[in-house]
Length: 467
Image 1: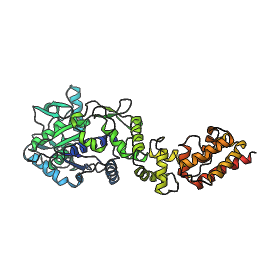
Image 2: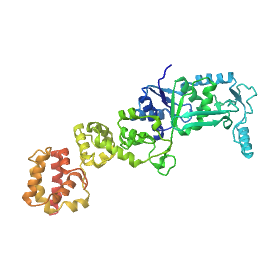
Image 3: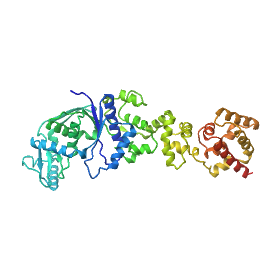
Image 4: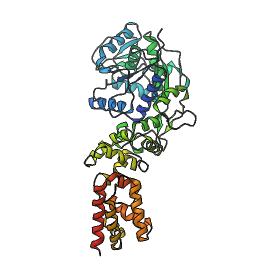
């Protein structure tokens, strides 16, 4: 017997990959990797009206960006319709499914009558024993066993039991010939030999029905693990009003994939007090038994903190490569990679996303004219003489050498008996166009002599104009 663990992720391509779906995929991927099993990707695209190729591609891109590689697939349900119908026929032939001719109007009347009489508004089995065959407007229903209990041991939620008389004869095949979700997932998971179904706990109510279908088809029932919901800060289901909910929106905002993975895994899972995990550590440590039952609350500030950690500690060369798209988006001319890497080192302590790095460090990529109020405040005529000396000293030294630059500035301060703070902000404003920036000597080394001299001379011209 093959004991290999096989997990799957099965999104519907009706929109972007949502944060909640990404966490489910991550848990399934980690469990497969932790157990040396296989992770299968399936695209559930039987809803022809809402499924799009664009959504499919966006989901695949998001998975790849997060590093959630799959071992098999992607498989597409739309290519497996004949197989689903053959399994429906097996159930009909064995008397475990039947054709139903009840119209939507009749079903609504039955529902209203049941509610009026205080009964559960479920299908009453009118067509179960009619022996009907296919026909216009007819559907196929699953014959739920009339009495009994369905129990399963959820790896996260524990034992769950449901009485079969609580369930109704759900539709397997719609009148247009399309199979329904609850049936296709059973056939798919069985034929793909999925051993562990890890999914959101909004599917818990589907599980007893699906178990009955496995049994009716004589198939092995997999292990289930239902992960808790992700809530917004107001404890309601996470939605757009809480901020971005799609994975690729965070990529576009300048988050690193490892930060998002690290944050998502900590929603309902923990390992002691550890907060920061490498991928290797996650694979080694992850276990479904450590996933909590309570809903997780999404905290954007915590995710931003993690992103800042990965930006600060990441390889500057890699961060530089990721930064190029943000430089292009801002319309800046892209400098060489060595220059971008120096910018990354300069700004990473003060910025939390890739977008922040470009916005905060915009002066590295273009000359930023200081606003008039800063010019008036810092480009004082009495500084003209000192700035002239500063430019002269800088023209004769290697500005990429921090020590040489600092020595030159220190000598200038001593010659003029002034404190550095008198010169620091005028220099900062001249070089960056703003009053907050990385360290002045880091900026000078990165900008290079040509830019530094040109910008200082512009400031000097302002000072001299006001004399």
